[in-house]
Length: 302
Image 1 (cartoon, rainbow, N blue to C red):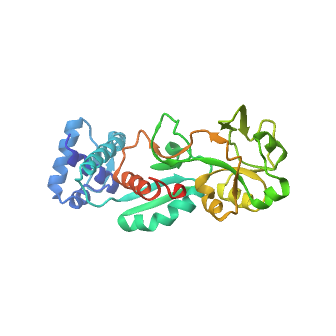
Image 2: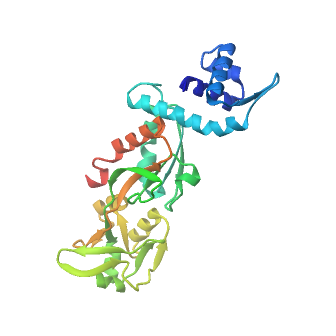
Image 3: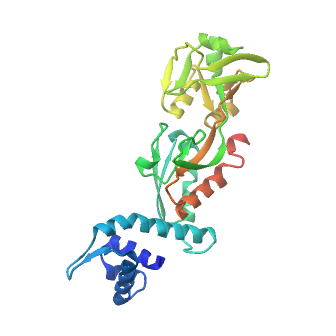
């Protein structure tokens, strides 16, 4: 199939003007019309309804359009992978991410990315609750766990080691827990809808979890930044990713508790995108940029 004709069709479908689409691609009106006619013969269907006043997509044209866009995206991605094709990357990238992570690590590095790729726009959906990539029409998302959804594929950005921590003032007032069982007597901050995580130790074979079984959290939160701030203010003990609290750990406003116990959940930070999507140039360069600036190793592990 002539991909140049397919590219012309996609442009003409968007502009609803074959002459203007051909002009955009450097084609004379007669050449553009002939190329589209040849594509229609190849497909065995009329893609447009033509009149002297206007051009509209036919039913067959509307059905073929998403496949045509996929063909063009595949070609662009293949050429980009070989270092060929259009030098400039363009388009709007719809990116969903944890608001807490994005505030700390994504927003500060956006200016350089936008300077590198002036024809790319970024639309951010920032929330600490999970969004559906496919239903939401997102190109890419950042998630803090192993991608288990069979409709998604991903690239690991960094480890997501988690710890239990509290403020020195809280520990001064309520005491330092020495064993996981002691947590039942403490004020706990828990992320909303989070499942209990196993706590393991080389010196303790007894099964433990956070939050402990039958414990009642004092505060339930759906925002990682707010949880960090509350823990720092002395509200209680929380489980947090190192990346969320590494600055506070360095300055001493939060301290790790039960350091001999590991949170056994194999969590990681993943960049995921729908399997049905072609890895377009705009998505590929953004993934590469985030890996360059955040991963290998991430700043919180230095």
